[in-house]
Length: 227
Image (cartoon, helix red, strand yellow):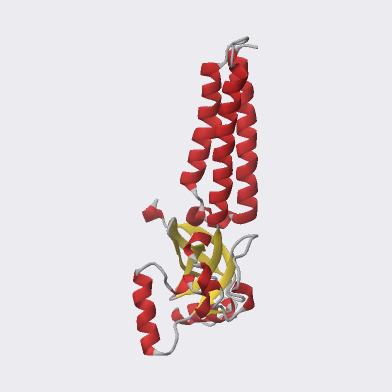
């Protein structure tokens, strides 16, 4: 077999494996409407660069039919690719979106690695005692009434632990969705046009439309000024 045929086979297999992995990740953890605000672009570009491009190119370089040690070389290349694929699975899992939190007049996309394990145990709602494994869940978050506690929360938010990452302050999503409508001078369940609010994350920002009857997200779009 020529080195070009070996390259083609290696490329096809690598593309199939990485493509299948990406498809499963998107299907399980990244709803289509969240791609602009949650997609781990750097992770997937790294996987493509190493597993789909670099691996087959290395095969093209080292392959020569009958070459002593060829099997060892190919095994090493495959192990490096496998290592990066395992890294990709782990990274996609630990950085997946887990909550869409209605708070302070917007929707925050929260990722698994942004939530401290100790915070989960403080949740007053059983649905948020652990991170979801099958895609992000809706939640609401509300500041406490106590002024001192509010001030402490604001200080902690400056360190990256804002209320959207604190299940202790979560409320049912419907309650906070109603407040989103009230901020716009509307009432949830009015049956009128959907309400558009900001949606933000550390990977992007844009707008999400909420159903006027239920408050549930309908669709979303990126902010063109940030593209």
